[in-house]
Length: 628
Image (cartoon, rainbow, N blue to C red; front, side, top):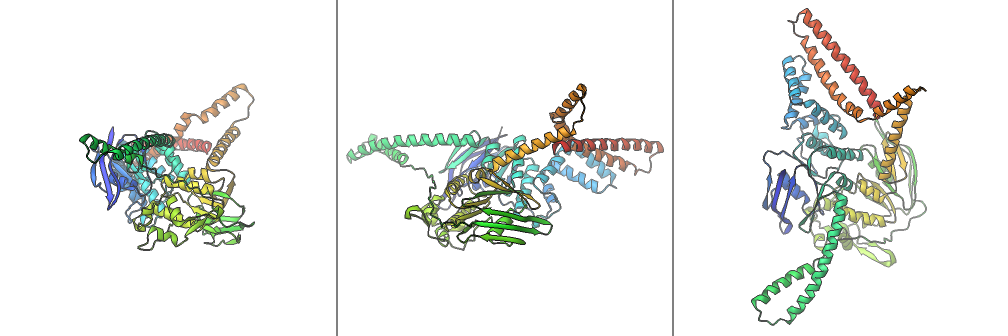
């Protein structure tokens, strides 16, 4: 079933034509990702689909009655509402029913309002929905639902907007960089959520593992042409390579034909027939095809950075904490030459604080940070670059340096570095305020690299960078001979760039793990399985009889069965329903007209409900202990 059709849309800003005559459709249950370089129109396409912008030409047709939700990179939320009020400020009918029910619980003396709200929950089967929306808020670390939007951080706002979009269960969900501001655990949960939910998605994301595990179609906008690949990221890479090879073959044929036609053109007399004029028109078409060049940029730099001494960076018993929040406790580590270290952990565990301590932007409460005399830091922060009004791209980078020295006395100029990071000569003389968010991040990265540091510190360098730029950055970092310290939630990037990890667990616990992110996940999963098996063995009663052994094996299998998992998932909902039924029964006692017989009957009914709640709660704890 077609949900949306895009027909021949075009968008330009002055002389800068982003795209023209673009057409595509989105069908139910498709999970589509749009890939393109920064500044070529990805966000404009998303804004057009969401109704925030309109095309210069063409049109977008929505199926009648469908509901569309849009997650912007910088979501606009009502500053005066709380998290809870933002969630319920929706026209979703089920959410309104849940809201009425929760209000009724706050005013137990109004029995009629409670009864009406309870019946609404039953009629819309809203119990499951209520459980799910609270789980979404919990997974996205939005636990205090009474916080006002105006005090939330940028990351919290993005997560609230994401929660709002998921909870509303739209027919079509349009997402702009959904994994930004999410830690690794949240991203993996979101992957699983999209995998099991029948949602139609259209997204822009640079997270290549997310593309691999969530999307079933990739669209790539390249040089104004839209290419579609009916598969995930691996399929896209494979088929794109085939397409490029085919284009190269066709271009080679065009060049041969061009030479032949060029020879013919040179031999033609000035007076030409209608037939020859037609051939002349074809000649110019062939010429255009033959001269077409791919704008692929490979970074192959043998950087001649300042030599490192024997002492790189030493951390001696470093401690740091904030009120009620320990970050480091007598932490020690000596960095070696060529260290390639990644840092992972949940938001708020102290990753950025650690980088600030190393770079000297913050001081430890105790302990010493000793930096080698030859060390020159290059620190890429999440804040980005401060731009002066009226500055051009080339002016910004020249403030930091004119060239990077290479091996054998060669050098790379500021202009050449910008070209390698996808700023062509024309773009270098654009005003910076015309750049997209991703292009500004790319320029900021160039200002760090032009200073020729030998110790690079990168705090979330992949945020807002397109996949093309990420490939360029990865190529650069693979050849980088100095030390590298990276905080990133981009698992693909971390797997490629670093060879061991600091895992920030919280409460000043930091583990040093020898391997990349995928190695770490495999290890963690094996530990979880081992712990579960150990618990299973400890819980099994010791009995030598054949009957008991057989019974124990059956019990162990049952603990891990599909039915037990299903029971565990349903118990919380059943307990909620029983709690609601208990409150409803208790309200009935307020009726002064009840006879003694009716009161006895209600008492028995209430006791039965309480017994059921107790039994189900006990069973929930039992299953919960196994899962942990």
